[in-house]
Length: 556
Image (tube, rainbow, N blue to C red; front, side, top):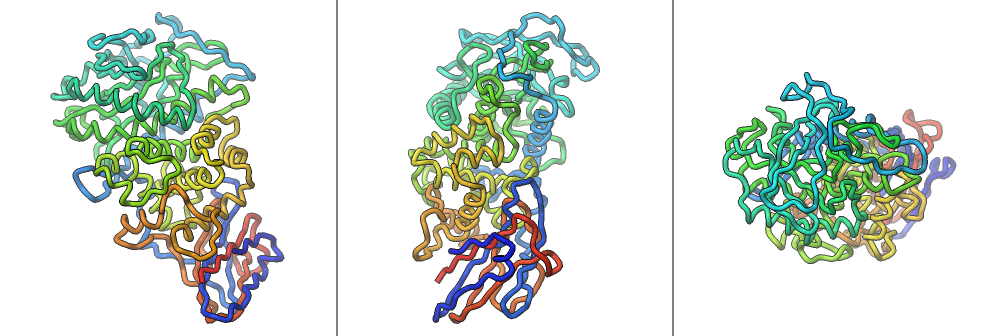
């Protein structure tokens, strides 16, 4: 395997003769660490012809702001734009409106129990009044108790636009308090007592210990020793009529801020000042207008959501309160990649797989559709979307809040880097990523302990070579936690969906622009003679932009 990066080398990359029929994969990469720094390159063969860089657009899934879920009742993915659209607005609001207090020390604010100093806009409240702050939910509550809570609803300012409600405690476990919105009775039949106990048991047994092991102990700003899980029809209402899919649930960073200004913290009037998830409620008759959802479906659809959102909660809370050097929340692409990884780690725990065990399609489907759909399908599907258009979707892209393919790429990089640079303890590696204080590329590089060039080259090569049976391939060019080819082959009717364009000597055409933190794939075949390739600027002349790389792997 050869890695070429300097301008003089890129001007002519010599491929030595082998004396026998040989095949190569040539990856043209953009190692720029900036977000969405797309560059156009021209790749030229030894015969003087430009090599094609186009790929089959017919294989792309559009629009790219699509979330995919898979229902246990059917084998086909269901396009879901609602969840990703809402989450994109939510995360954008958090990063632009919720700021860390100045200084290296942040003391926790004290939650008020009366309505003094609450900022509220009556015209934006459903009740046309300003709710007072909610008192903390004590850890001593029992089933049947009612508590006051706020639910952020947006659409533009989630700290000022919210609903106040009462919720009934339905289950209490070691780590969870499960509550149900009292307004949900209009939807008809809901969970039974055994359902609520099952939700609490799964959280205590698998989700809580797995996420804590991989990302750290959550904060406990309300001092009740529990995480609140609120099933509320207000989440159902977030799905806009006509949107594909539904909003399944979320965690809001605003709940970590006080509802009045204190200790240098800005206020977020909505804040419950608690660790709380908001989850889709059963609604078999579409009483909330967000689509009909049977009780059994809601139980299944929110399992992966809780695992995912819990990572966001742990990451944000510890950066805000337990990291003196942290000055901001994690950047979107890495925050989402870690949250998607949480789905995988919890699924492995539920099905008895270790973090390091290499999983095949047979493994992740062995325990039935429910676990596969809840924890494994979405990550592997998102990764498949990236494979269909690799040069377009950089893993560090700012479009991680709206692009399925970007999330698939970012998730697979976390998987790859944990496999190769986790030091044999993946949970310790991901916990360091979640802790900060760095963010994004700097965070990934600091914890992996290698330059971004090394991470990118290894990952791009692994996406082609891992599981392909290439003789003599170094271990660092492979995934060890997944047989990615086996999984993707089974999800795509026996076809590995990575788009690879023929680039044998004599092929002509202009290279497609390559986004930063990704690459375009080419294959070349010879009868054993030497040949060369060169990389130039978009017009076929001049040195390519900084960040240009060529990776060459001989397959046989």
